[in-house]
Length: 455
Ligand code: NAD
Image (cartoon, rainbow, N blue to C red; front, side, top):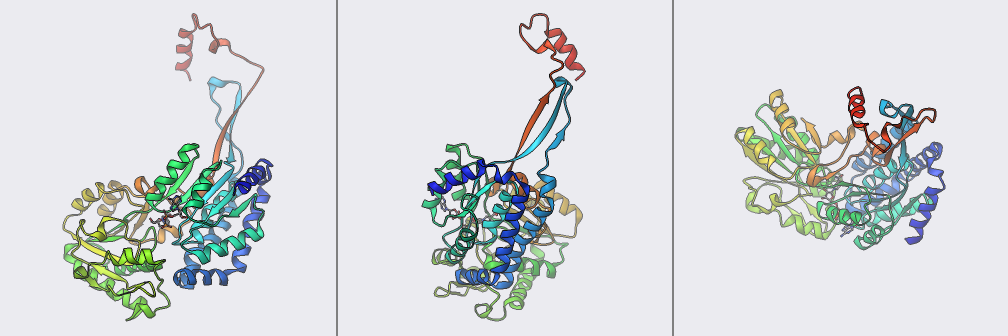
């Protein structure tokens, strides 16, 4: 590991990554590798948690292809040195901003979208001219192993390298000299990463999780809301950082929404979702046990069936829950959907203002006043009006959290910016040197005041 970090510093210092055509070649190469191994990637994801190939393509590979294409089409423009307006106080001079890569970056990934969340930040880092050490999650071992094989076989380890391992490996990597850390994972581990980064004052991005609410008001198109909520919640078996964690629906429509979501579950996965090839499994026994403990069978409206051998949890709707219930005390991160009710939208807004700022928030409403009110008054990383999760498909939207759900953004242009330091440079002319700024200052203050009035 020590050798790899050293090699990456040498590689970066050689200046190779400053060449835009080198960055483009590497991105294109990565895309070709993924395209040539799609079947193996589907299989690894299937072995790790029975992820359906359709979801593997839509939420992992397609996202990466789109990101690579977008960056390839724009790097030349984004990487250009940009002129900045000069200030009179520095006359005669010219000023410019030079986008500069940080250097050696460490990308730490979670297990829930194990290809996409590992490679998407890496793509941004490469486009911006950095080298990358990638630490995938040990909880998706087949995917992690495949990533290590595909990357380490095809790239110079001084430029891009996959280091497999667990928390200990990450800790060891964090103790090495790094120039940028990009972490995706839980809020708890995010705090540990930030403490380590503080030791060497390494800049970082934290992409964390949390409880993302969904609000359905009286004006909502209820059937469409039910379909889009069920899709966003049960894709990847609820193991999605931006999945609707819980729903607040107007009291008058509570029963009906529960019934409609139940119908959608049936239409997506059939009468027995355990037989459906379109429904993923829970990643490991630890998470399976954690999730089954959140299900209070007295409060199950629909579902609740589990099978420990197959790590299967039926898409489950819970009602009559309150904030003291286990299911409401932390991020669910699984296929359990509590549906609560409200009578006044203002009441829900003030309740949510007191909670941790979530990564996502979804509002189902056709009332523009309510839309404005919720979007203005509540703080959250990002979200949708009248949909769930799908905003991630728009590469022009920055993605990231706020407060407990993290800080910093990426995707598209913001990925390039995240991994770039905007270096400010002023080039001064030598033909004039006004002496006002130099000591001794005697008699100069009044001139300074006069002059600064005109600046
Ligand atoms: P996690 O925090 O347990 O692990 C993430 C990574 O950190 C893994 O690579 C792991 O090996 C490493 N790690 C774990 N403990 C560590 C420690 N003590 N020191 C150093 N490294 C350590 O997260 P997870 O279980 O893989 O993922 C689920 C969480 O991630 C959820 O909270 C989810 O909301 C969040 N998430 C956020 C996003 C986002 O984009 N904001 C995306 C996916 C998941």
